[in-house]
Length: 113
Length: 118
Image (cartoon, rainbow over all chains, first blue to last red):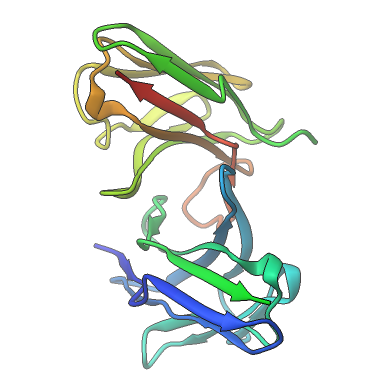
């Protein structure tokens, strides 16, 4: 079985400050990890993914995520947040032996000007 | 590419009526997924198609729900009869060819259909 936990329902940061959205996962095999962002009244948009290789993955809009196998984490980061980054963020995991994506509950990010 | 297209974007209907949601995946994508999003349950996978064939429909909540994919460019999700608890946002997503387990390509989501059943 595979699952994802996003421990924070909400994250609030000031514009220009670093942004971190936390994600931990559980899989039986090798994890394939994804981050998606959802803006109001829109579908989910792909940000980045980790398959293998370098633990630091860079994605769209200046976001990056670090895969940490020992801590089973895949936290999303952005060095300098923008007001336009305010949205709902989902972490998702897929096990090597499965086609299904398991999504976390989502974290609402609010960046204040 | 226009991305995944869903229609209608909004649907308001009365309990007991039939509802049909439509999806056009990205051209060339052979895997198609239907999801439901609610505040209480988050994102739930309803059904997965690969090469137009339903592979896993274990997420379909009841017999009132059915999905078809008659060809590579079109899929429908039907609810008959609809109930107020079916109110949610329904998303369709597609991913790149083959859908094989060793392929790890991201899913591309449509804008969703917001369904309200009164």
